[in-house]
Amino acid sequence: MNNIGVGSLVIVAIIAIFQGAVTTLQIAFQLISPLIANPVIGEIVSDSTLLELAPTITSLVLAGKVGSHIASEIGTMRVSEQIDALEVMGINSISFLALPKIIAGLVMMPLLIIISIFLSNLGGVIVGFFSDIITPEEFLQGARTSFTPFKLFFSLLKSFTYAFIITSISCYQGYYTSGGALEVGKSSTKAVVYSAVAILCSDYLLAELLLEP
Image (spheres, rainbow, N blue to C red):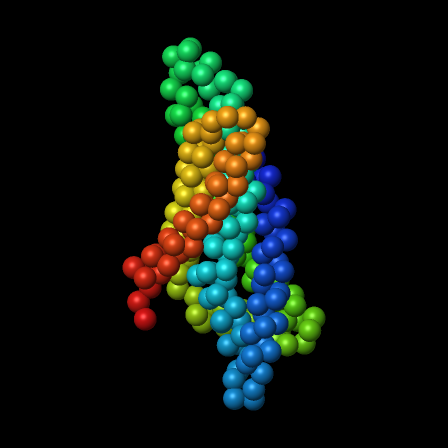
């Protein structure tokens, strides 16, 4: 939990703040019109962050950081015969190595995504204020207008799904590594690539199943 959650907090915070800031600037650039009220900018930024940007972008970053770490760690244990030693001692090696990482991912990644949602909106508020695009009161008015509990539930559902995808695929790639140091690097790369593709596919499937037009 410390490696996955606390160790990823800084990079998640940096990405979330700039993500909200850039989204606010781009939405404001596209919607500058006397016919469109300023709170609409906050509404669109908040919805985009909650439904897509915070869970998906954060998880893709974590797939690179957390996934590669898990795969290389377990892969190194495999090629250095540490896993064989566990099995000789009668320990179920895959449960001993994979289950704590999967549980830690399911606990910590949703918390990271909640932090990402908050910091993304905070970044939008700060940039909107200092660039004189939208006041904090107008931004929050738009965010409150569009918020529904289902959107938060949908975001958390995505975060749990992505957490399981990242940790399980990474553990699998690391556990079934064979060879030497070169294969450990290949397993780490496969874990990141496969996790990213699975995240994008599940993103579409969840949106198709749960979001009604």
